[in-house]
Image (cartoon, rainbow, N blue to C red; front, side, top):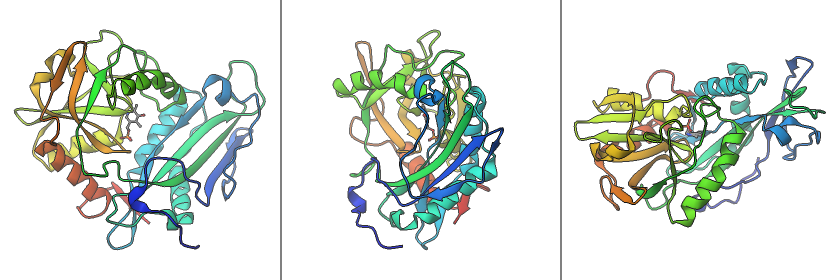
Length: 339
Ligand SMILES: *Cc1c(COP(=O)(O)O)cnc(C)c1O
C-alpha cells in the first residue's frame, strides 16, 4: 500500500475514491459471504426498487487516528442497530451486527493509508448502505439486496475552529408524524433538498424543522439533532418519534450528565420559548457539534450565546466527545473499538 497525495488540512466533505469497498449480496433468502472489491461502480437492474421507490437506507460513522497510531471506531454497534431498524421499516433484510462491524473494520484496514493523521482533525468517513435491487416493477419489496460499505477521508468540519452559524425555521415538514423520520432512509433526504436550498439562498446554514402535527416544537436541524443548554444547567434535546435518533446526541446526553454534571433531559423544545436556552447547537457525526448562533423564526431572530463566540458548555461537550473519539480522553465502557 503506497502513500496517498492528499492535503489533509484542505479536505472537505466530498467524494474521494478509495481503494476498497465491501460488497455483499442478498438473494434467495440469505446474504452471501461478502467481499472487498476495487470497483466503485454498482451494476444493478433498471427495475431496482431503490431507483424508483426509494427502498434504500444508509449509515454514517468515522474512523479516527489516535496519537499512538492506533485507529478508533466510535460505537459502530449503534450504527448497526439503527440500520437494522431502518431495514425493518422498509422491509429490507437486516445485516447482523457482527457482519456490519466486521465489514467496517475490513474496509478501514484495506484503506488504512487514507486515514488522516492525528492532529489534523480530519477523519475517515464510513458510509454503509443497503439498497433493494433486482428485476421488479410493482411497488413491492425488492427480490434482491445489496449491502456495501465504502469510505473516504473527510476534513475537520470547522477549519478555523468551532464557529456558530445561523439557522432558519422551515415551513416544510421533514417527516410525517408516523412516517419514516426515525429511519435513516433515502426518501427523507431527497425531501430535504428543497428546504435546505431555500435556507442556503437566504444565507442560513440550514433549516430547522418543527414537529409535523403542531408546528410548535423543534424536531431537527437539517440532518442533525438539536440541543439547548438552559440557564440552570440542563442539557435539553427534543423527544419525538419522527426524529432520527442521533448517536452523537445520545452520547452527548450521557456525557452531559456523567462528565459535566448537567441534568440531561429529553423533552419538548417549544419554538416560542427559545429564551430558556443560553446556548444551543446541532449534533451529528459529520460536524460533531455545530454551535447555533441564532434562529430565524418568522420575523423574529433569536440569538443564543453570541453571534460569534461559542458558549462554554458547548465547547466542553465538543472537547469531551472529540477527546474520546480520538483516544485522548477515557471512553465510557464499550464506546470504542480499536483496530
Ligand atoms: C444521521 C442523522 C443525524 C445524526 O446522527 P448521528 O448518529 O449522530 O450521526 C441526525 N439527524 C438526521 C436527520 C440524520 O440523518
